[in-house]
Image (cartoon, rainbow, N blue to C red):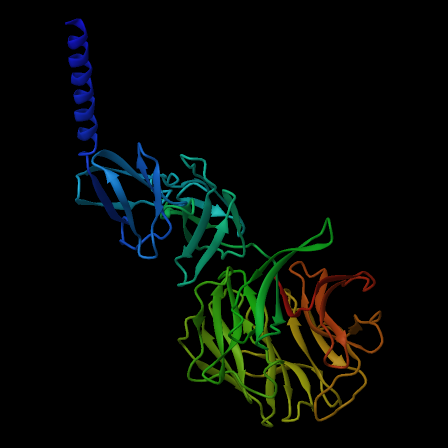
Length: 502
């Protein structure tokens, strides 16, 4: 009986085990398909690694971003997509026997969660700062939350013209902007980027440069690229013997020359080519507010590079030549009036007006530039004193001393004359009206050179002038000489001509 019972139990167990194995075979298999694309533009991502968890089955996407995982047992799964440069993406998938489940991955770039730098804070100069120098250090601050390297871009504009200065790819939080204009308001802004996120901008700050350069000397320099004359102001450091604070007052793209400063009006008058004519202009000491003075009657004569004009001492009027005529005009362009005409038709090339307004010095010449005369007239046109006449060779460089006692002029003592008006040995002379004594200031002049364009210093103890080789093409240098002795000659500025010292 017991034996029979044991056999029945064994049979029952075998039957139960057999039934369990048949249940596992009925789980079934399904398929997972899908695609991996970029989140914003849905461009396919090729060769992304797609992994099925917990099975660890792995496939890679094709060129169009598609993938397929076959023979997946029915059940719940987590599917991940990985690709260098993108954030890993996870999606859930329920697999059903004999069915296909589709999974789409929209992947973000690896830096999607990266935060941009803080907006730059403009530190120096403070917004609204005034009286700034022509070289200003701009300072700002910015930080990046992830510590990414920051690159900066600075933009600078002004209220003078439409020029915009852009400085790219700065890594420091400071930049020195130079060659600014006097009396100009500047606006600046800084952009920051971590090269991951879009740029962030600072607020706009502003500063204003000092009004005037307070320079005492003025000169002309020829621009190599354009061939135009350009006017500069400058100072001379007596302690170091060096030029300093050079300021360009006129642009390179316009021909401007012969600067003459008037202290009373605080204006600089100069000559400029306009509409194929030469006219008088004025400007502020910083080069701003340029105004044309002459219009109907331009300045013209034998040689525009030698032609000169003069201010009245109070700065309300100017005199200038037009062939054989001398005109006076108000500084605003009104009141044009002819005040003198040469009797023989000779051209007026240079003029100077005495400080008290009673006397005008003139240099005249014929159409070839020679047959020169230097004389003075009163305001009625009567000749007062003849300083030079009946000589051969070139002359010029008129300047009356403040007390009307002295007249500066130049004369080529070689008496040489040529079609190109070359001067061989031009000296500076001082004429004393009371005694008619003429003193040669150029006794120490190097041989083969010319002394040109002399002007009294403001205190009239010195003379400023140009010395250059008589070849007519060498560099010009501005010097100063002690008027009393004539022995102390100081070089001031190289590559400079047509000096003025006020």
